[in-house]
Image (cartoon, rainbow, N blue to C red; front, top):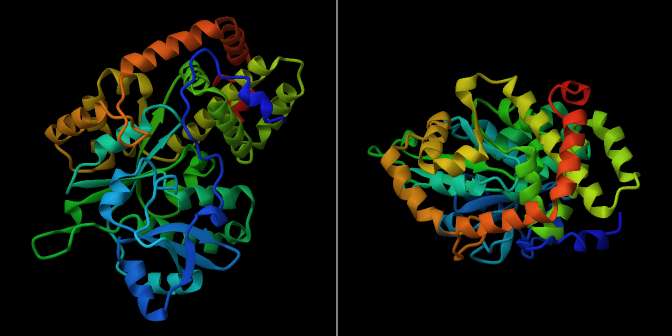
Length: 392
């Protein structure tokens, strides 16, 4: 599809923001270094070495030497923000990492995830749940999105189920490493980590939640119309991301190929075409969430609608923290929410005003009023949970 089309869908007041459409191992911008054997244990055991990439071609994991402050302050830890202190990717052979894992200390902590549908307040929530000396939120780590790409491509690492399970366990175990110095006065349970992956991983939620130990999960959702508005608020760049996400998601839900193809080949104008494709991306993510919810008890998998997060961020964050078993007090979250409300969740050192976003949303709704209405009628007929596609 002609990429110039995306540039024509800026709407009345776009909100430009860079989105990572795909993850490419070769574009880290860092120099790869073969780590000496005597350094492997240090790299594998210290949170100062952050697991950033898996290079399936060379058979190596790539680690970035970083710091707690760099990871905490980054809007995202997928490479969009500078993380390395030495401009290097430290390589450790995958086979050797797996050997080390067999005898390494295994955390008793569950995996903690905040899954989401894009542009729905999940980054704000992750920042709010990040409380100094108590919890640590990893926001959209690159390697987790890479796992989704490996699965979508049916890579040999995915095709071999034993290797896939080992890979998932190794990756998720790395994110459980504590930034606290363990001592008789400090227990592992005193500090918990959580991962807020990219929505790119919505193709593999059951893998992440069930293949690598116990998980506690928050699902940040939003209505179809809110998703439309948030995507089109960002103009052509966000629309392009939503379309790339749709093409990626359909690898996990092949029964949607026909409806996607029908829309792509229709005579709709560019705005109406991408509005419908965006709605399909929303329906696919709803489908992914429903599949995950069917696998887990309600007490371990909470749904948090975007509207509730907006209405009462402290109470929403508190319920999320309890589901994730972060051990945070409401007073911790009152302070954290207050600190983060006035900051742009996705752009460090940039202010944020909800009134400004509301004003842009109103402009988007007015500009696309007739387009959205026609598309939502189509959505009601074709993509609601009662439709055969959703239940398939």
